[in-house]
Amino acid sequence: MTRRQHKQAVRSAFDRAAASYDGAAAVQREICHRLAGFAATAPCGGTPRRVLDAGCGTGYGLGLLASLCPQAELFALDFAPAMLARLASGRPEKTTRGTAPGLVCGDLEALPLAGGTMDAVWSSLALQWCDPALALGEIARVLRPGGVAWLATLGPATLCELRAAFAAVDDAEHVIRFHPLERWREEAARAGLDEAAAAAPRVHALAPDLRRLLRDIKAIGAHSVGGGPRPALTRAHWRRLESRYEAHRRPDGMLPATYDLILLALRKR
Image (cartoon, rainbow, N blue to C red; front, side, top):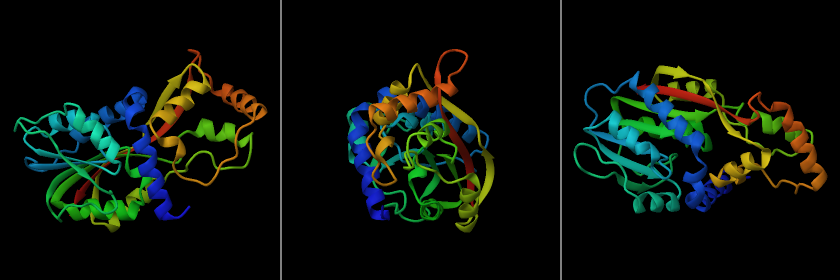
């Protein structure tokens, strides 16, 4: 898959998922709360006046961001027009300035914003679909000197249970391998962003069976992004997949899906 094809797949997948996203995004909401707590430990210097939610989706993180930066003018950017339409049709959180966020359709790798105009950038579970050098270069460009970026992305152990189970079925790449923390650190340094804080916790989605786990992954749009064509699963393949995944069932009877979370607070030099 070329870079252009990848970007088209990302946009199409999340456009299709806009209507079902909120009903299946429990882990995504948990990660937003984790990012908010993490961001509070590495605050922006001074009072932030202009703050960007880069990859806002349907807008769940905006309420947390409004509480974190109550005096700021918020901007909500997403690559998928249907996600922004879903946000616009709701009632997004307002700051104490009494204004709803400005909505921007744009690419994290080519932000449609002037340089040095943002005091802070927040991004929760969007950067994993991006080239780290391009996305961090753009975040650095739009931040003012001393501005901070609060980022949550995914590492290579994400959905490790599913990857292991599929390995018993065929040789196709069914699960995307995301970039490790070290790559994000390297590209941040190259972009002129100094690390203020970092963490790498594990978060788990839970479901009573594999079909429900996969249904939730499909509902948030992540199932069809990346990789090449995948062979259709036969009934025998599905039974083998379920059997292998059963090895991960927890004592409480639930099946987990691991999200290898990376949290970064980066300050522009």
